[in-house]
Amino acid sequence: MLSAQPTSQICALCNASALNYFVRMKKTAESFTSLKGRGEPDAEAPGMPNDFVCINSSLRRAARRLGQLYDVALVPTGLTSTQTLLLGQIDGLAAAYGEDGPTLQVLAGRLAIQISALTHALRPLVRDGLVEVRHDTHDRRTKHAVLTPLGKARYQQAYVVWVEANRRVEAILGAAAAEKLRSLADDVASQDFLDAYVSGAKPPSSTESSEC
Image (cartoon, rainbow, N blue to C red; front, side, top):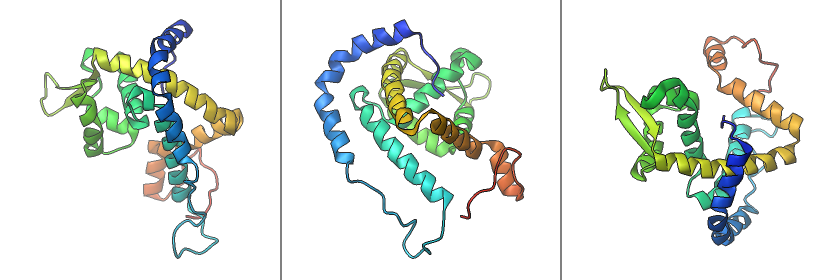
């Protein structure tokens, strides 16, 4: 999750970024317009029975939709939603791991992705000077990720946009539904859920689910 920022700091960041936002507003508006009509088909997949209900398919469609909306909102910052989330995770873990930053293994675990996928996602951030990947001083097989000064500044700019996009999504869903969605998503992403799936058992916090 993105860490909270002081109101005065957020306002200052908004003012500092305002000119850039207005200059690129036309491109952003056109991008939002292009999303209209991109509705996903109602059928879960070709050839599947009409009464087949798949949780995976529903979640993936929802994730794609939200990803599109956040990506468009972040156009003025030059970052994607995935990149912003990654910068936020590195920034949020900095306090626990000090100047060396979190290891790639820790980051991958927090994002529920493979190391190879994380390395791929980090490449453009490293290339653009936003993230530095360092070898561990005691074990060179282990690598750490830290934000550069430029990376911290870019993340703070993106954070302002992210908060506003998140506010709009929550306003549409309603506070209660948004909280329930986050809670269920966190349950599915948890290690307890994975362990329960592998063992065939039901995690303590889960409820009866639809067939998939």
